[in-house]
Image 1: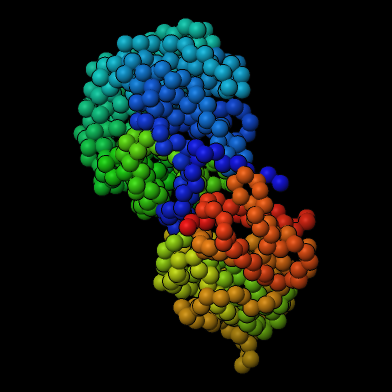
Image 2: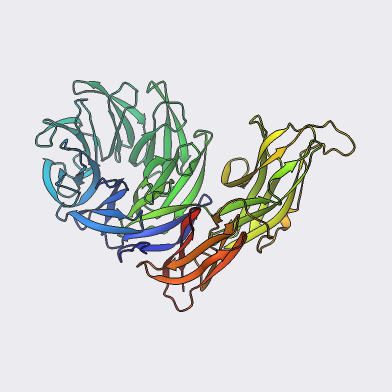
Length: 599
């Protein structure tokens, strides 16, 4: 059985933590000298996200082919003689339905595109324009609304912002238009429809001009210049998205000299802008992008800071009215640029970045919350009589990070009509040690006056009420309604001292579903334990494989009774590195976990 082959070029590093989300760092290359540009897209059209990067000091544009959902990466050279390769973008330039690559060469002062000759395995370079000393940024958009892709560029030392019209739609001929040839330190370009008039506008950042500008496209190669951020010291990066969820496009920027990340609220489709500071303490803020990092339907931001050597993300609170910072990596040497994409096809956002002085191009795989919660009622099905009663259940929380974690835990009850009672139980300032499991038993009172029908009872961990990291639930039924008498339960009262919960295995009762808990500790030395829950007697196989697909251990193989089974992987005698624990129950469970042995 082949689990996945990791190239020597790829290293999976121990987990780092940001925002009570855990991240595994993977280095694609540590010899990508002067790594600056990065872009993520399905370049070879095989259904997964690949990575393109530029090495300014090696004059190289490369792409890394994603194999096996991020388990393997195959590097390919696009060009090794693009002098001062700095910025990279990908789009269909020649209209043949595959993706080409566009780049800006800082030292050569040129913009070029590489024609994809098939499957992204062979490339042909075509010059777009030369004579733009310090060509530093490039993007692609249909500027003149003719159905083909044009190219926009910024040149730092030429101080120009230009775009090139794709005259024939096939990249064979380009017509240059200059927005500004005295835009001091022209540093970044981005294109999006700011004013909701169905054409693409242009956003620019001027490093020495200290300005963020919106260029309004009014058609026929005519533009209106709007200064959005003035006196924005060291304007380094610009991007855009609907930060406040009001249906229009807002602007975000990074200022390297003033250490600022900022967003400008779009009022009435560009008529007015309101400036909001995200942070003024991000030392050497060099890049800003937007994405849904924690999948809570609010747009978050991710930034890179050159002088802080840092990649971090900010969680949006109440549509950008407040922000909470979480650090992903603070040892990424001269962090220059970041982008994002779901590299491992697990439904969450991963972060990709370049470290100029560290010569690294790497990505951080989001592992989700490092706190997970499970609740199981005693006795299934759970039925509450009309007079009410108490439901006893067990709570299990697992911390897969390497730190002591403080958190909140709370429960909610969804009534048969869909309304919520929240929180029913609330416990703040609970602590759990690194790489630990945590277990307690609690009771929930269901009052007699509660309506009859089916309820969903949920337990969550996080920071109440702003951040939910993990939730689990079960269903119970109440068979009728009773007025209060001396024997009736009359409130949603709960019991159980969660603050005194301890480590250990859960008491034995049948789980409600097939599941495998995160292994802990992870990273580990020399052993780690994984728990498999079986709601009924089942044929269970749990095997461990190394990165070459070789089976190195078998933890289970045979018929197991219903309940939770704790299985230990003892790695004595095995080499440090990444291993894969594969658990299967025919027709019910097929799951792989990655664990890291660190000697």
